[in-house]
Image (cartoon, rainbow, N blue to C red; front, top):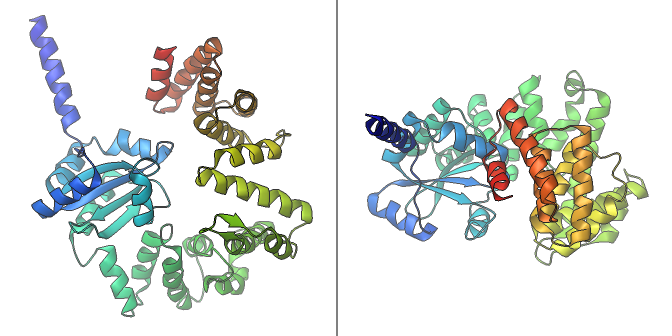
Length: 386
């Protein structure tokens, strides 16, 4: 009887596991070939290993029965890390800039629809239905825009679908939207602030012209800070050559001197160079610049220090640099102890060979995860290895 109970439990567990989305194994070319043969769209969960919302989708949404039933019967499903292996080239091809991004791709390898972010069950299934409806696909919506569509709700929806992955196009959509608006509500202002990336954008004039409306919802100093960031982003885009991966320091310093002090400009340029070096996987340059920037880290926030410490854990192998990262993680925990930074500290201690402290902080991280509802599976794996 006991054996039957155990087998029943295992069977029920297997059924529960099978209810969610089934993701295909194999390379992307084989997945495209299968989709073409079966005349189905490919659903791609384009994720990154560090992405919190990606992990929540895996935990909360992908395993649901209704989600699995719909996606498994209508699509060939693929789950691809956009920062590893062939995912790196796929991210470039499909312009994936935020995580998680959900792509719907046809048998010819063309993206016909997309969305992003953490999505609740009902909306997640609706996005899939929209992807199958040619009149609701992003490709169709873009064509309707090019044909002159001016409906406010249509424009608002299209901007939301494109603002992170195609900001230039979203800027055009929002420009048409705002041309019809005499006054702005809170949602309008949020879209305007998200869409205004550079001073070259047609939205920048709206940002300036609607200053009175914007100041009704945000303080003047925040408006000026946003304005400064828009100018800074404009200069940075022109100062960096993505083909040669070089910076025009002179141009950057000259242009930013119009709205920043020399000290601010130098520090920001160094930070931008560090971030770009990390993105380009130029780890020695990234390591050198970050160590220079954070000799004094007393003013850095807990989240900022945790991010730095984790980047060093993932990318740096020099022991003295890793010990500096341990200090950043310790300070992060001191300022605001949480699941994420205690996990970072545990991993760093393990990497520098301090198993005792690694075990202690891994246990603490798991304890914090239980109280905050976080997924501690990776930390539990670390603890078992110690």
